Structure formats: C-alpha cells, structure tokens
Length: 551
Image (cartoon, rainbow, N blue to C red; front, side, top):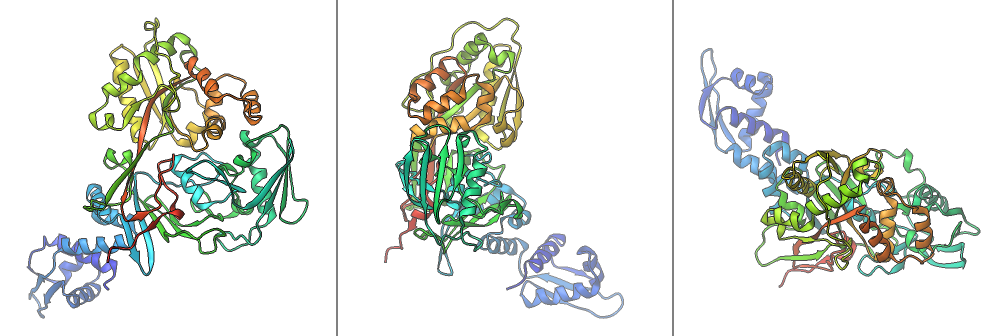
C-alpha cells in the first residue's frame, strides 16, 4: 500500500505536468516539487514501481529524460479519497478534494452500514461539529442526545415513553418529603478504566447544585457503602427524574484536570468518545458497560458544514441505495418561537409585542417561505403541537418604531432563513430588522440585551417534567421574562403546577410567541432494526442493530 504522502506527491506532479508526457530533467522536476534531485530520483523510482508512470532517464549534459504518465492524478485522487473515507479521515479528505460539494457526494455514498474487521459501524452525516459534550453546560439538541449515550445518571429516563428506569442506582426510596435514599451498583467502570466511586457521584451532584434546577438540594452524603442520601429544602416529586437528566450525569471527579474534557469526555455510558474534531465525532461501544452492551460497535458522525440547506431537514444515515431507503418522521414536541426581552424598552412594550406578533405570525412566515420549507414547517399556536394557546396579534404599528434587534445563535441554518423572512416582512412595514448572531453559550447565558430573540426548543419525555425543567434551566428566559421563577419552581416540584395554564400565561403576555413546529426526519435503512426516533430527532444507538442480508 503506497503512503498517502507519495500519492499526494504524484497528484501534484501530474497536475504540474497537466498529465502530459514530456521531455524534462531531474532538476526541473525537483524544482516543481520543491525537493532535492536525489529525493526526486527516489520518488520517480518508487512511483514507477507502483505502475503510475514511466521514467526513461538519459545520462549526459544536455540530454533530456522522458516522463510518461501511466495513471491519471484524478484516478489516484479518487483512490486516495476512498482510502481516507475508509479510515474516517474526513479532515484530510476535505483538504485533498477541496470542493465541499464533491466531498459531500462522496460522504453520502459511504453512509449507513459498514462492516469492518467483524465490527458493525454506522455512519451519519451532520451539518455541524459537536465540540461541547459536558453535562451541566449549555448543550444543544444533538449534544444532549450524545451526552445520553456517553454518560449515566443515578436514574435513566426512557426516551420512548418517559418512564423512569434504574441506571447507576438500582433502587431508591423517599424516606420523608425532604429526604431520598438511592442504592448504587458496585463495579461500574469509567471509559478510561477507573472504577466508579461514591466520591465521583457526590462530586457530580455537588456540581449540579449550582444550577437552578438542583439548588434546593441541601445535603448529599453516603451513610453506608453504595448508599446515597439526598436532603432537600423543599419537597420535589421530580427528584428521581432530575437525577436522570443530563445536567446531573456522573463525571469522574478529576474531570477538570483531564485534557479537553468537554470535547473528549469520559463517562460510564454505553459509548465512549474516541475522536471529536471539526470534521468528525466517533464513539465506540464500551465493552465494560454495566448494562447491555451496544449492538452497533461504532458510530461515526461525519461533519461537513457550509453545505446544502437540505441537510438541516433531518438526520442522514445512508446514501441513495435503491430499495433500502426508509424515512421516519415526527412532528417535534416543541417549536421555534420569538422571545421578547423585557430588559429592552421595545421588547417590554405591550404595543410592540402585539404588532410584531401580528406581522410575524406563523401564517405570514409560512406563506413567505420557499416551498422546500413549507413541506416540513407547521404553524405553531402553542409550545406543543396539541396546544392552541396563542392569540392573534393586533393593533397598528407603534409610533416611532423604526428598527428592532433580533438575536439568535450561530450554526443553525433555519434561524437564518426565518430571520431573513422576518426582515422582509418588517421592511414592508418600514421597520429595519438588525440581525445579530451569537454563540450558543452567549445565547444560553442571555447576558446581553436584544429586543427579540429567535429560539427553538425540543422537549423530551415525559413532557410534564421537561416542559418546565427545560425553560427554567435556561438563564436567558429568566432574564427576559419578569416573573417569580422560584415560586414557579416550588409549585412544579410539589406537583401543584398546571403546565398548560402556566404556558398559556407566558403566551398571553406575548413574552413567548410560537412560530413553527418542525418535522424531524431520519433517512435510514430498512436493514436497521430497533430504530425509533426520539423527540430530539435521533435514536438510541445502543438499542439499534443491523439485520443480516437475505441469504
């Protein structure tokens, strides 16, 4: 097998000579490749042994040797690209080919199932990298899903039905309204080999206490081996679910000293991260996982940003294989929505909120959208598809309103599409929309002020748990919506909150204005079994498997 370096040098030589036979000298070729005459002679001999070219050397002053190409640089480039694909070296592939559209076509043709050295490998194409997988930080929808595959909590929330299941804790009980006890499994190992200890669990939960959702935890202690007691300042019927929620998943207590932990985290879950960069996220089944070992040995998420917008429609698991292609879809439990910022005088104005809600109504946006978006957008009149809480905006344009500032987070194609449509609708009313893009971390913290924020949310099951917990855990919403969030949290924890009424209150003030429900899609393979889409638009990797081909 020739080295990649030799292949690159041949391609470069072929390009410099336009693939044509020529009479030349060793010195001229060495100058083309910026190397010594001696190294050039070695290269030519090696390439000739590979059967790529013929080098007829002529000795003597003034004599010119003949270089004849027997293989095209394009063919070798294709072969090199195939090798890089098989090795999952996407970054080098982009550098080799240069044209991202061509790279995308090559990637799509290699998606789906692969069987290498007795291992089942799933390849997925995605539109952006996932460099932050740290529980308890600002995680987007796909990062949240990946964290569920990598980490374990004391409990686990079944993503298909929302039911609570055992995980690191095999049993638990409520000793009093403010005192819970959890019994932990022994013999659990982290991906880097160390055995899980009670100190890891306590350190992880102490860290989670800094977050609003966990701020009512007052004491965490272990009275006996593998027994954990948690004491609260107020009753919380949702505590077992909170301990299966991503922010409280268990990390090794030395995580802060580990190199690049957010991108290359170490957990105790069914999959371990083996590579994570701008071009690829690779996770491998953890053989020492304490539960059922995953059936797919390796999942490779290939990242190719700045590609066709159609990739944002859903998850692509395979290329255009006739007869095998299948699409699974569901309407998201959530929506795109506008959030008015009460810290801004325009965002706080009831008159502005009413008028903007009328101009940027779901019907107006979908009417303005291109046909490709209309096919998988659905007008939203509540945070959930089954709810119709929003009331139509009304009123005339407020006097003196000439501009508005809209902020959203980067690396989200549809945010840009929606913002562009909003800009056009407002421009027709002589209002300039100033669009500002920030990082997801900046969006999440919400420390800057904007008249309006464009957001999206995907709630997980059970909805009674995630509806409040997701909105409450995002600092941006507490900055923008002036209400007694701590009182709301106490009611929710006590099981006294009517979530439909609570959400309706947010919408009645136009603090939140639902815009669009989005169809989530997975383009997969009929040969894959156990693939059931969750509310995040992904599926549980450890439960999926490939059916063998028909005999």
